Image (tube, rainbow, N blue to C red):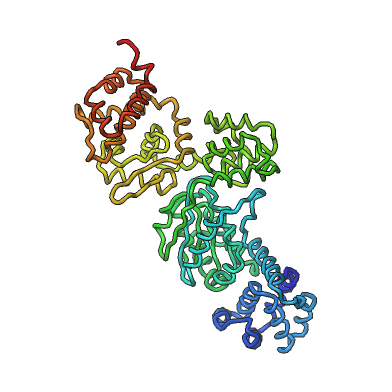
Length: 536
């Protein structure tokens, strides 16, 4: 529907709701094939004449120009000439019927629907990620007409909110699945008082035609109010809960409606009922996408970017948040390419700070808030991961030895990190391997820099306690990890005598050479030569 026509409906909404009786008007609109029998039934289910009129207008607002003309003509023929006169100047011109005109009208309507629903606008710098956007739309279509949940999850700053908002800009998706509109709430970390305020504001927004209704006084009352509003006034609409941290918060929105949530925690919907679908937002942008973002920030062609641009994108590890922070800084300080590259290489995350379209102004803030949400005992386990090698998938058995626990206990702890997008899991049959995103590992090593030696020492001592005087054998899933990285941990622990004893052990040399060949062994002799050459 054209913006002008829509505005005339909105301006005269109160007069229309106060006067019209919907039954005969709907008959004419059904005969014009602009109103369905299902929509007619939705209107009839409302309790009062005014509520039925309000619902009919809500439905018309989601439709095209033909619906406006049909409604106007129905008013004329059913004796509401005074009301028809109010809408006369808003009658849309008849287009030539080409597809472009139709799409332009639809686009204007979509913009209005999303604006009214509180959906965020595109960020100033935006690059497309069509596969992820299509994945979100596909899961929304999977909901059909049934209540359910779509969870868009991933680590901090991966673009969950931007991608979700982009998926909702599809006119066909809104027409097919959510003709009642979209209602977006930025939730974040909340206590009960904060959640009640969010619910009260949402109810007030949905009750725009009843401004004098009393606001709900507690969460249960607000939940009931929201349920009735979604059922009676917005039966085919989508509720979007952005940035959900706690499963108990979702229970307030568990109202048999259709809900999309964004979260770092994959398991957050475990506490609610209904059909559930997931979209995992991968943590890394392609290199070319990263360069495209930088070029848009500094208003240069990709081919004109300085040589540091490629290095910067590589150091950002594909994070949309980090690339956007760096791009925004370079827009203000275009001569600082080398400086910001050096800050990234030296892990000086606190110095990379800038207001952006993301919720966080610095990388360390985005990372640390996820870690702070962990229980205290889980924080210690997560800190232990600071000494893991980069780009290495670690078998569960290694962490069983480190923590002196059974496999099931360790997997439960690690699953908590995976659910909160603080760790990644590669499931290869029965064997689980875990790894950190490079930025997460950089953050951990910087945060725990003064404790790294002790952490390395702890894993070496746990290895010695477990294997005593033996060496791992190939049939054990942790075998290759120790042969590749035990020396690395000993060097990090500054256990120089133990490192010398290991590297000069004939049993170790023989076993390692047979398993991985001589090249890796020679590399370690070169890497740790300053320690191995010392006279004892």
